[in-house]
Image 1 (cartoon, rainbow, N blue to C red):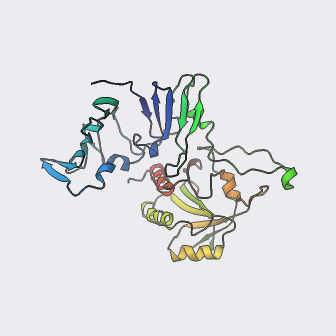
Image 2: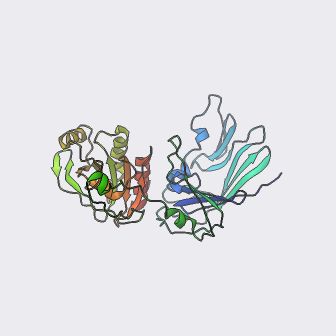
Image 3: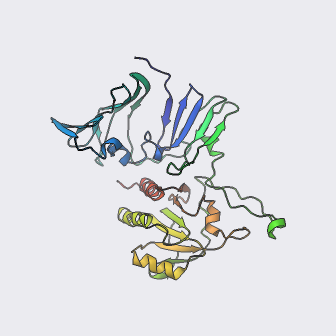
Length: 371
């Protein structure tokens, strides 16, 4: 059996880096969206996707304290009591596929069971294409990783592809690409230097808009202090109210053009209230300055959305009717969900189909809630 040049993969819970010397390419991913990084408890206990919809001819066999699920083209062996996956095999007759084996299960007080050793191997035509060996010496479900938790160097000429902001649900969404002209001591820092949270709205010049062009504002980066809210007024489902007390709290901010933007997002946020009950976590919404406040209040009451919301104010000195708070955050588009940590720093800013779910998981992690 042959073995090709393996790629080097590093993950710290925040980013995942995969380097291949074969083509001098380094791929950078968000750990929350990667199958390698363990961003939350569900990453360790989710049933592999190939077993989520089992065919009618699936066979289940009891093997003592284990259970074996034999679906078409895939086999899974797990502990009957804990669900710990000992083995998963999806090898095809042509000698291609994936095999995973996990050893040394360790039980944790919160009910999770993690492996001490995990071996994953990909084969192609009976040839080992890629292997990954993971040792878990210690697992801390409450640890918070900072962006500078580790560094990874790369040689000159490395093609750096940053997938962290790629919306995989959007056709044509591409990673940022950069070829390093010289040796790089910290790939993540290099990628972050060109990774603003978003592109701020264009400020017109005096010649074409009748306003004085102001200096470009420093783009907000993850970890920066959250800007102040520049809203007109705060409301809840009963009408006008006082501003929420956010000091020392983890805050989920849902920005959108209008109050009735997405019933699924609102449903997920309402369900999350049960998780955050009694915790220092606050959910708020900020709507465009063109939103009708009375209609928004009626909508929030009708659908039992009890968190506070604000109507933004118009941003000054912009050609288009942007919103002041939205502009201060430099967000990529009106539909964006931001998470602020308990120290008031910007922890994440997501704008994609699963942004609410990711924000909730981030808030759970930051607040130390056991999922």
